[in-house]
Image (cartoon, rainbow, N blue to C red; front, side):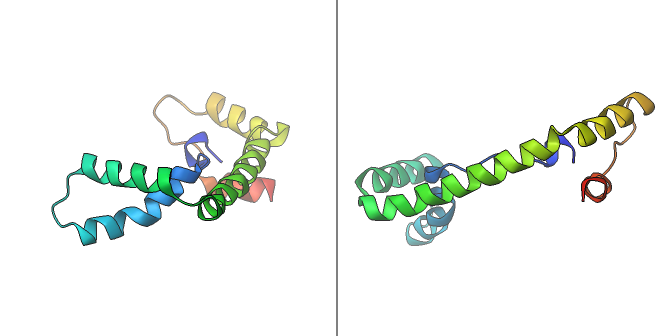
Amino acid sequence: MCHAALLKQIGAFLEFSRLRRPQIIEDNPGIAFGATGKVLGEEWRTMNPETKKKFQDIEAADRLRYEREMEKYNSPAVKAVRIHHHSAMPFGVELASTEDVSAFIG
């Protein structure tokens, strides 16, 4: 697994924005990007705690996913594969694909 293949963890507000942004754009044709952000921010600030907690729970679950992926990425077996590929490949040559390394670590 190359570092670029790791998905960073998603924050609660970013997940809310990802889900809500399309509806705001549909409801407000031609709305500017910055104005969309202001609407999202205002909705987030005034959101009831129960609804906000759902997004915070998604963030917590995704944090665990990210930590597990980083543990695998930093494991000695995967590090050995990365080091081997980096030292064996001339500059500019493609490194192992995510599938190659995933097969190695199971």
